[in-house]
Each structure stands twice: as structure tokens, then as C-alpha cells.
Image (spheres, rainbow, N blue to C red):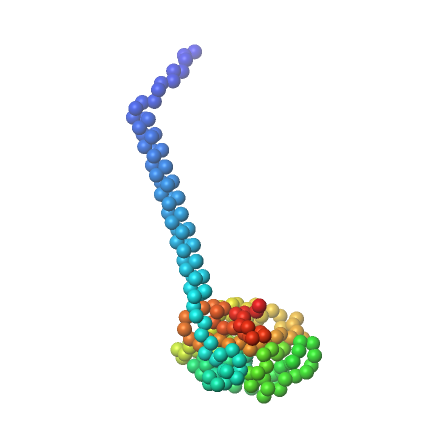
Length: 217
């Protein structure tokens, strides 16, 4: 049986294999470089976005008390439970929603002590409790208010611009009303800004014991 003789690779073959290996190495380095650069860019813009949110000065056009809000000429939007400047107040829509039903506000979650509409509309009640139906109606009111503001090219307040609230209302409206008919929800007075850039949850705050909180503490 003839023996198989292993012949050494030719110079051309060695050069070809070496060139192919170098190309793969260069391509691998390039791909790694591109991926690394992309990661740096993503991290940079993420940090830039976070820095922007931290540095945006929050303007409180209505102050942080009902008396200060009144002195500044702000309106209390009962359906939004917010003090807003005239430019962000839709009195016509608020009146429409308040006339839909004899809404009831409760002093506490588990008792039937009610707060009169006149007292609620003063904007002095920091926290109240409402029915599940009221909460869902509030969501539709806020969406309509946002739509009307966009259509009329008027400013949006910081509470309605916060996407978190829109997502929250989506969850609320997709739940079965009958399953939560007797459930009460708390509402609290908010102080949003009016117009300007979208700064998310920094666009509004509530006050608890004299301190400002952007969303629930």
C-alpha cells in the first residue's frame, strides 16, 4: 500500500492563510470597537438624560399652599385636584364633568363622612377619598383635557404631561368596574408647573407636612 506523504504547505498557501487570519482579526477588532463605541454612546446619553432631569429647576407657579396659589391667581381644578395657573386651566371642561353627577368626596377611606363640594372646591382639603367611578372619570377627564390643550395649542400642566399618569389611568380603565365598585381611592392636591419642557415626575409635586414630594413618597 502506497504511503501518504505529507508535503509542507507552499509559501503561497501560508501567505493566503495568514492574510485570511489577519482579515478575521481586523474584522473582529472593528466589530468590537463599534459595539464598544455604541455602548459608550448609549451610556452617555442615558447619563445626560438623567442629568437633565436633575438639573431642571422646578418652577412652582402656584406656590405650595392653597393660600399662596390664590394670591398668585391660580385656579383649583377639582377634577384634577390640582392648583394650576390660568393658562393651564380648562374651566369649561371642569364644569362639564362636575355636572355629570353629584360627586361625593369622603373625609376618610372607611367612613361615610362626606365633604361638601363647596369645601372641596376651595382647594384646602389636602387629601380626600372618592369612589372608583370618580377615579375612572377623572382619568377620562385628564385625557380630554390633554387633547383639548394640544388641539388649541395651549400649555399642558406638568401633572398631565407626566406619562406615568397616563399609564396609571390605562391600568385603572382596563380593570373591571364591577369588581371595584365599593373600593375608594385617595386623591391629594397637586401643584404642577405649566408649559415648558417635559420633565416627567419633576413637573409636579404634592405637599406632606410642609415637604414637597414628586409622586408618592
